[in-house]
Image (tube, rainbow, N blue to C red; front, side):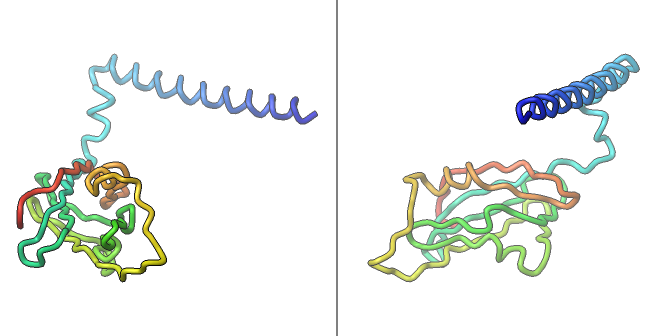
Amino acid sequence: MTDIAKRKTLKVIAMTAAATASATLGNMAIATAAGENPLTDAGSDSPELANIDISTRISAYRNDLEVVLTNSGQAPVTITDMTPRSAVVPRGEFNFAALLADGPLHLQPGAEVIVPLRHRNVSLLNSVPMAGHSLADTLRKSVSVVTEGSAFASVTVHEMTALA
């Protein structure tokens, strides 16, 4: 009995997915025949994708590691959410949640915001599990930035730069 019920459920799901895909392809074919490009013209009134550059550097002022988020786009950006909320390294933690503690973060084109390293207390009994990757590799694999309108920003992570 269970196998028959599962089989029927899978058939319904497959048929629904096929119907949705064929309707979408049909709409794209109609738009293409009308001379429109459905991939580029569909979002003509939507905001431009935000560009956020993330880099790590040693601060000349604090003589410590910091993460820098820069709006490298041509328009102002409002960041409403960011994951992960923090990045843990052997010496401490970068608290990205603090950037949004007072609400959304507004960045003008070319503006940057700095996330300093918050040192952790040293404990000989506890250790921080590390995968052996660089901070830039960890950020590259895990960071996502959400802007206003629940749109994801294009994020580029750069290797460590010179002194700030």
